[in-house]
Every structure is written in C-alpha cells, then in structure tokens.
Image (cartoon, rainbow, N blue to C red; front, top):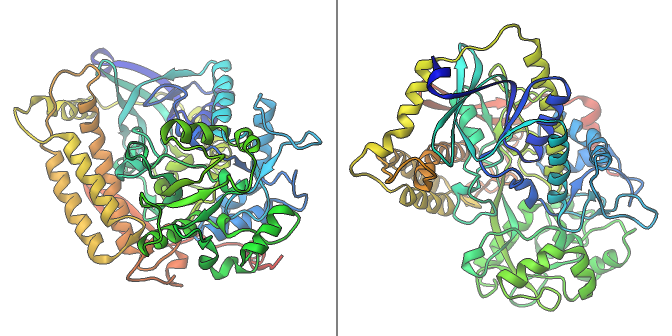
Length: 600
C-alpha cells in the first residue's frame, strides 16, 4: 500500500501554487467546506504575485467616472488582438471591481484619492487610469492580505514541496506525487480535485524577470495528465527590465514608472515611441511630444502618451531601436522620469524602483535615467479551461492565473494579471470544491504508478557518469533566447525544435552527485522535464501560427492573417506523442461584438 511506503495526505481539494491565484482558490474552496491544502514549491509568501508592482486593473471609476466594465472588456480584447476567450475577458472585467473591494474589506491598504477612494493609475493599453495600487508594491500587499485570510481559515500549507506528477484513476485525477525539497523524501497527496496555480515558464529563457520557481511545472503537469494547452506561442517580453549590471539583467522595472510620467528615449535623446504607434491606437494616442505633454499635465484630455501602448508594441519598438544602433551603452534604451517628476514624488510613488536601482545599479532615478530592455515576463498560453469554472479538459483538474490560457489572448495588458488571479482564483476554488464535495467515496491511488515515478526520479543518482543538469539548462535558455525570442522565423524555429529534441536525449542521461537532502542539482534535473516540455510546446505552436500577432512576431509572416484571427493553436499529448492542432475560437455574442466596434 502507498500509505505505508510514503508519507500520505488526503484532502478534498489541493491547490498547487501559493501566489495570488492559488491563495484565492484555496480561500474559496475552504469557505465552501472542502478540506483544502496549499502546496508551494518555495517558501510561503515568495510568490511571483509580489513582482506585480504596478496595480490591479479594475473599472472602479474612481479617477475617471466614465470607466466601466465594457471599456475594460474592450481594452482587454484589443490588447489581446481579439484572440482572447471572450467569456473570460467579460467575466474578468465585470467581476474585478468586486474582487478588489473584497480585498480591501480583508485589510488591503491602497493609495487614496483626495476624497478617500482607492486611487487608480495609468497603465499601458488601458483607456482610463484603472489600476488600484499601493505605491509600486501592490502585489506584495495583495499577497500579505490573502495570506492572512488563508491562515485565519486554517488552510493546511505545505512549503518547499514540489509536485512531480499528477496521479490518475481512469479518466479522472486522484492526487499528486511530490517530494520535500529539504529531505528529498516523497509525498503522496490524495485529492478529489486539483487546482493548478503554478505561474509561468520564464526560466526557459536566458533573460527573464522570473525567478527559479518558474519552470513551467503546471503547464507540463496538465499536459502529461492529458489536458489541452492553448496559445503557447504567445510569450510576453516586458519592455522594461534592467539591462545593467549583468548580474541583475532582466529584473522587472514596473510599468508604473511610465504610468507616472516616465518616457522612453534612445541614445540620441529622441522619444522614439511616436514612430511606432499602430493604426489600432492612433486615434486615441498623442502623435507628438507636445501633445503628449499636454495629456500629462491635463489628465482629462482624451489622448494618451505612446509610452503607454500595450507591452508587445513597446517591446518590439525597443528591439527595433537597439537593432538600428540607437540603443543605450548596454544594449537597451533609456527610461527617464527624473525630468518630469520631482524627487519626493518619485520616492513616494516608486519606492521599490528607487531602492532597486540605487542598490543594484548605483543609479539614482530621481536624477538620471534608467537603462531598460525587454525581458521574458509572462506566458499568455496555458491550460485550456472552461471560462465559468476554470475546469480543464480532464476531470477533476482546474487552473487559474498565469498557468491558464485564454484570458489574455495574444498579449496581456499590465495590471490585468492581478485581477485575473482574483477573479479566476475565486471561480476555480468554488468549482473545485463543488466538484469534490459532490463526489461520493474516496479516491484510489495506483501504487504501481507512484512507484514507477519515484524510481524514475531517483535515476540521476544511479549513473556513474552523465550529463550536468546546469549545462543542459544553460543550453536550453540560449536556444530559446536566440531562436524563439521576440522575433521569430521558420528556419530558426525548426532549428530550435531539433536542439530541444537533442536536449531531451541529453536530459535522459543526466547525473547528479551527493544525496537527496536539499540537492539543488537533483531539483534542476527533475525541473528539466518541465522546462523541455514547455519549450517544445512554445516552439511548435510558434511554427504553427504563420502570422504576427501580439506576443508572437514572425519576421517571415510580418502581418496578421484573418484565418489565424479565429484560431487557437492547441497542444495535447497522447502516448508520449505531442500533437499540434488548429481549433476555432468560441463564438462571441453579437452584443459584445458590437461593443468592440464602438468608436467611443
């Protein structure tokens, strides 16, 4: 029996990942009466939600009363190049204000307007100032608030515990196999329902804002269990990551810097974004510096600065300037807020950015510009889910947050990530609890399945010689950065597929030294399976989509194709074979379609 051989825990619902989506899902599941556990790969509180510094996008209408869910919905769909799951975008826009006010009721502290309402700031792609924020530490405040709520509800938390594989009983899930990172001992979780809230895939790339946890665990766990993945070709390169010194390259520079007046300039001092305004945004974006400055001083003006275009547009513009030889000394561009804002304002509104540059780069952003450049930041693609319940295409599995696909289409707007976590975390937790509580009887764990997976995990210790996991990871990051980056072409993508296949063969011979107790080399050896799986998914999907749209730019297909405007690229694995298919988007109702076509 598995119970006798391994440490075993049984719950109605387990939530994998303890960031904003995972915490909100666990809180909701527990509130419904389901026995719920939170399992996190790192320490409780060290979630990537903390990195979302700028704010939570929600049409509260506190700064611009004319803002509402319909405008937010339209902005989200336009930002995603209309490839979004329309129902997810609708629910998100409608429910985000309620989730933000709920967070406030639970104790979250927000910056305030003069009359005491939650203050909202400008962000790229949003028609109105819409982001509820706490300086530039919004994600940190959100995690603090949700953690306190979860602890108050008595939810069981398993820290530094990594899920290796989801376990199945016929055509539905029955639990998961994990290991303690400290001791290396295996743990079996029996569960009727599982919520994936594991975040993204950033560590597949060399330059990324993501830290070590983001190895595509949830994407690969779902794929291996038989669930569909969609939109994996769409990877967001945030336009502003640090570029110098090399030790901090890729660390995020919040969009809040531009939302509070920062401007992008090339080495010649030119505000270059005016050259890159796409037709879709031209009518509502200032086309000269003088016009943008008028908007800056009079926020009631209708037109916006091009520095606040959606992230994919800004990242491509920066990439073009650097390639044209107009970049900064270290291969980026300059982001300047010092000439527009006084030092006290900057320190008050952007305290984290001030300290980050002061301590890591020796730059005083109140006196001089920052050097910034694109950094791999966010995966729009992920587990295919039902919009209302977040149920995946395998029974008992749910997904929310970055690991779920569909909500953001081809490109995510800044600030939509935090409201996404709240809206769909709540919905996933509710649906998972209802599903689990509706099942009669317990779940059955297949002892042979567990034993096979455990034996495979220990194989790297048994080899007398073999591959170094760090070398394989480095080669994978170089491959993805150079061949599957911001700009893609068919020849390089095919080359990347061949390299990934070769790396998969090398990973089968990986060797680690020492013992199981907190062995980082072994942990990486296990993570390589996920890293390679999601890298192949990204590359194959990028090959399949023969057009440029949002976070996917094909130099050999530079224009958008009407055929692909109605298509999701779907990946699914059967008997170790990874298949790629094109499937139609859900049909949008006529009233919402008309909403997208409105001029005002």
